[in-house]
Image (cartoon, rainbow, N blue to C red; front, top):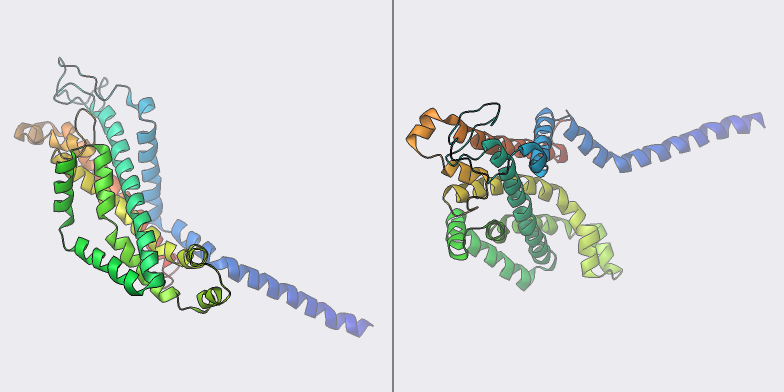
Length: 308
């Protein structure tokens, strides 16, 4: 009796240990990715600073102190002071207030435009990669055609025809950015669709839509998230370039790009730094933070990268 108990106890303990190991292994990938990401110093710095920028932009009416369009023609181009902490522009408008409201525009363009072309990329890339054949040929030839044109020139041409506005800027950037995500999703699905679990799903009669959504796309999302992160930074720079050329957000609505556009005079560049330095730094910091976050996500997802 005692012998059987001494033999069975270690066996039971071993079974429990094996179960725990299996459970920890099943949960390990996501935990490892999160751990590596949160240990990435630059990514954490970028995330923290981006959160601050986002909070200031979202709650701009609370932090601004002035309406972004309020003019004081008696106090134009005033240097930073207790009244205007970043000074005033050529129309007497508060630069700090316009900075905060301009951040709203840049973040909206970055997130919404990327959301549009990521959705298109997922849809078209999934169809091309999963079905192949004629569907793949038509979609990928469309990708090749779009990639033949210089993107910025096409965006400038399209915005010039449609008219400068926030909505048109988002639509144009969104509709011209889909080839990259489409090729990424297609390439990932081509490597996934022949795996055993996908073949098993097909063999038991799971509908194609369900197989794509539940079994194929989860394997594509990690690199797509990294691509979207860098895409947000690119969209912010594109909007700033369009607004600088007066083809994006039109005054008096502020954006970081059109704030720079209004500071092109030589006397402003040399003597009135508060008119162009804050929006320039805001663009640089926002893009830099997003790129840091993208680097952190890429390193965390890539299994070849060492643990931090």
